[in-house]
Amino acid sequence: MTEGVTLPALLSRRRAEDPELQAIVSDDDGLSYRSLDDRSAAVAARLAAAGVQKGARVGLIMPNGIDWAVAGLAVMRLGAVLVPFSTLLRPPELLAQLKVSAVTHLITVPNHRGRRYLDDLENVAPGVTSRAGVRQPTVPSLRQLWSWDDIPEAGLAPSLVRALESAVRPSDDLVIMFTSGSRGTPKGVIHTHGNAFRAVASGLECRRVGHGERLYIPMPFFWMGGFGAGLLTALVAGATLLTETAPEPAGTLRFLQREQVTLFRGWPDQAARIASDPAFAASDLSSLRPGSLPAVLPPGDRPRPGARANLFGMTESFGPFCGERLDRDLPASASGSCGRPFDGIEVRIVSADNGQRGRPGEKGEIWIRGSNVMRGICGRHRSEVFTPDAFYPTGDLGSLDADGYLFYLGRTDDMFKVKGATVYPSEVEDALRAIPGVRHAHVTNVPGPDGSERVGAAVVLSGDAEVDLAGEARARLSAFKVPTVFKLLTSVADVPTSATGKVDKAGLQRLLQVE
Image (cartoon, rainbow, N blue to C red; front, side, top):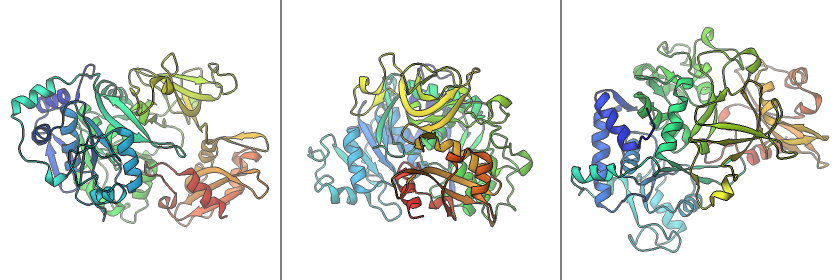
């Protein structure tokens, strides 16, 4: 269905096949696919008249909502490249990402949660917002900045917009998404129309997203979880995307009931926050289907830990590239795995010791290649990103069993040694999360007074649970893997995260160092 598809072609198909189906519902507003096509086409006409051409890189700073979807689709249907920026970025971070991605045009909301982004930019780069069309030394690529309310009204004729759309090819760049590891500098990852839509389509069956689905995704659109697994997934599947500008448990529960959500996807932490809200027990979420995150399902429908695949992917692969159907248990031998690679992806495990391809069950770095993988990374030559035979070394650790199931073991820069033995944080986290009464656990290394490494764990318990964490850990782990530093947190919100939403390992170490 997606071979050779571009964003404008996909929008046209949705309009033809599902004109009155709701495309997106955000808070108290919604748009059908017909209306989404009309509104994004009108904005595209205005942007084109204002100078946005094919290949232009257009930054977008907005919270989730209909305006984000309309603006983002308008950019991409012209053949321009969308560059979503996190609303959490501090001014110096935003300035750095503008430079790295060579943004030519920038669209922002006037303000959001007290932030005025154009004012923020002016403070760190004086003059950058006041002389439109003039090259600025701080961001030489930048030509124009608009507040969302101030994009010029005059637009091109519809026939001219259609002509521009017809020139968009699957090989053209679609989006630059910023990502970083728990310690790394953010990277601008470049995806084309073709690889993005192939990646989305390859995972629909495992993710159980079908036509007419009412899919709730609490992740921001400026991250791959909201953009690829949310907005573009709905477009490919012909589903309805449910989203909120500022999710909070009580309001989200009301929203999910009103909108009859059928599939709740996202991070497990997000579902856990919903399930821990006092209103959850009395909420009617009977419309939810298996394949939703377990925490929000009725107790009898929740799979046992490790029974279902842990979808595995990254921004570089445009979301998940490995999994199994989320409404079915894995074979016993594959329990705890990430499932098997999707169509369009080849996975290789490479030994850290000799750089050779690993045997079944051998631990090593995960390499991927295929038609779903990114085109490249901003500012880096292809030879710096890919191996000569086109594999991308991910920096993730794992193993493949004889049947092709992938087991994730953490990051190459996260593993550490305790008394000469290698500790994989993900393995310790899995063991801690299997302890009754433990809701969440995050593990990292903590230097001791003598400079030796110790295992540290930040743990969130369920309700008023009392757990002998050290004792339970000793029953499940080898002695050198048992945490010797524990920090009990009251909420998952207390876990330090980066602007890209990942656990900030340096922040986690500082938190545990206090102990």
